[in-house]
Length: 197
Image (cartoon, rainbow, N blue to C red; front, side, top):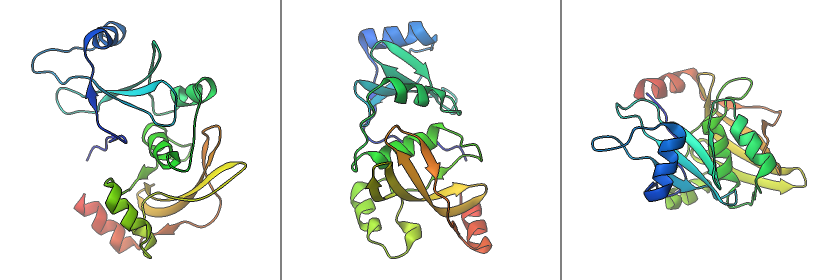
């Protein structure tokens, strides 16, 4: 199973001068029968968009961040995200910090492995899930905010297990797991989830 980032909004195809600039910069192939590059704004940066170039045969997409006329390739190490956090105006709020967390997890492999966020994508269902007493169903929840940033809890797939973990997202965009306990599904439940996917 290949996991792809869904984004936080609607994807829009690149057209005109934007498409021409993208093709000349990346060497992307476009035309009849080939998937179009698409973009969406990132709600936590000013004047920045995420561009997705789907693979024509169904493989992994290529991902880029554009800020003004600059185009950066996203890699699994988060170098482009770190650079952007230093140069762009990162605007984290209670309303968009969970979107940033999902974005960061999708394009960064933490030192101890990748976190895959298991979340409820539909806004009304997510609102209902946030009130669930079963923490596994709650997705990403903003637990609090302080001078150092935001505290989130999230259900993630990490190192072969579904876990409920706590994270701190600093005001500068750094994401780190907060020391403490992680709730893991019993082995039998985790094996069922693995078989189902």
